[in-house]
Image 1 (cartoon, rainbow, N blue to C red):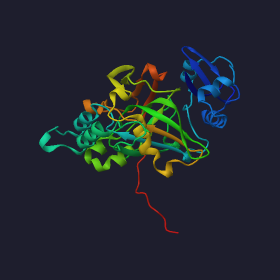
Image 2 (cartoon, rainbow, N blue to C red):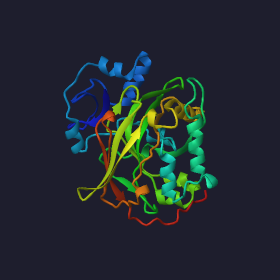
Image 3 (tube, rainbow, N blue to C red):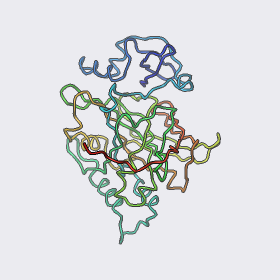
Image 4 (cartoon, one colour):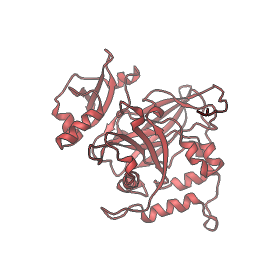
Amino acid sequence: MYLSQLILPDGSRAVALRRQDQAHLVPGAESTRDLALAAIAARHSLAAEAESRGQGAAVDLVAALAEGRVLLPLDHPDPAHLHVSGTGLTHLGSAAARDAMHGAAIDAADITDSMKMFRMGLEGGKPAPDEPGVQPEWFYKGNGHALAVPGAPLTAPAFALDAGEEPEIAGLYLIGPDGRPFRLGFALGNEFSDHVTERGNYLWLAHSKLRPASFGPEILLGDLPRHVEGMSRILRGGSVLWEKPFLSGEANMSHSIANLEHHHFKYALFRQPGDVHVHFFGTATLSFADDIRCRAGDVFEIEAPALGLALRNPLALDQRSEPLTCVEVL
């Protein structure tokens, strides 16, 4: 079962529920967040809340996507209260991809920090239930202002040295009135990054992640399958420039979802009532690691049937010159 948000032809917002190829509007729902708050208040699941509303008009999500009317599947009326973050080196093979991206040899006598972190995850990233494991690499990407809806451009700033895709699965969360985090579901994501900046020095990872991102178009309700197969591709001029399969789900990860969630929400800062969180779980597949350099107009396409409709975003480059940012003294 999947949820999505869209703009109707009359300009109003709506939530759609899809089973297989049949999608319909959820009566009385204008946002996934409001629907989730109602589910928390009623003490039942988000799926149960959506189903309790009955079945509204049928909706063609593919046509809505083509018309640019599909929104992010989860948002917040105040974008500053939507937090975007992620964890890296979480997937089997991700350390090799990171080292290849950095141009480093994997040598037992000269092991990289990335490989050390990856091995820590292999050894302690899947602890026993109800126990915390080793903490992962963590990064901040921004807030709701940094997000692009499905189909909209991912725009790299003029000072960026690279603009590359990262096909990932994101966990979507809402903080309840008592400060408890609730997972609403999972979505496809493009955790767009600047890999040249990161390659310059791994301590610039934080800078390289402060870029736009996109996720959706749909939320998969319930649990994430242990094994997820997907395809990441780049289209240039309508033709496939590069494509590569990717794997996700806990069977292909060095950390459990529960462990990644614990090490994010253990901070009280991230448990503020009403806030929304979008947390990317990492990847082991990058076109940059295969020496692909993206250009303006290229289209990123990420698909995994288990996560619903494919996510597509074109690449745009901000051509405006970036003068020195001067801070005025009051």
